[in-house]
Picture (spheres, rainbow, N blue to C red):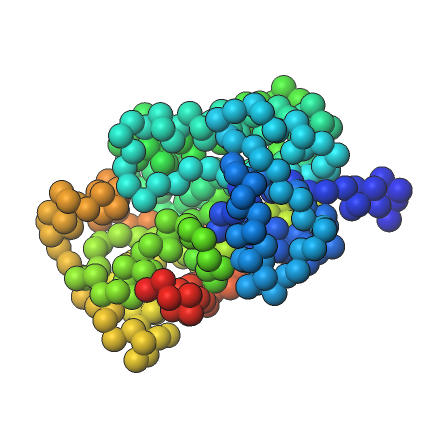
Length: 345
């Protein structure tokens, strides 16, 4: 290991949005890997919550974790956040459970927040930034879906697309345009629905699907979801951070192929046994879903995807970076177990 490599290993790694579902798992993995970590939150009062969640993951952060205040909508705090860091994981991004009153409530902070992080990283001499984008920037808004979605696919922000998917597409495009003019190196991870062990706080919106299934929603709409465990998303981030070939690449994070909601419900019912007695696995007609969407904002978010069969592959990450994710059944089972343990269902 060269002197530069040693210095890089000693430098802190920044994780934006450290109180979020992916963020706190990223902090845990980095600490376990021997790094010092700095993380941003909008309010430093979140530090106690972050440390409690790390404790549930079996990690004692001690003085190896520093929490600083920085907001995606303001320049304040970002120079301090990136100072001295060799790597940055930009995880923070708004993800609502309901349709916002205006799409700019998501698009502006997603795009401008990403550019703030990249500008600060460039000024601080950061080696590489790994941005958490989403399958939302790959597989939405176009016409007929391709046979298999991969990293060459892009969502169409001018198509029939939900505000969240548009925000992720616009933000990722802005990131690639920014680094085209010079450093830092950029790698992008595009996860599908992120599941896995919940540590507390407010988990990802994907987790809401598992909660609804366990609580006994009337049936399963004709929707397809990719599944990936949060621990594998984080593992891919760390590989994208350090692998020399990852710079300038995007990686679709999906375990196996996409599943229908009916398949997800069946997996959960089999995993939970008696604990899953309320789970219904019957498929419900599209017109019923459209009726429910009239008063359920979360269901309304799914209408543009109703009946659109999708397939995707994580083969690039597996081939290039040696990524080997858990099965969808493992990810979904871990989600359900943790939700029950925390009394969240």
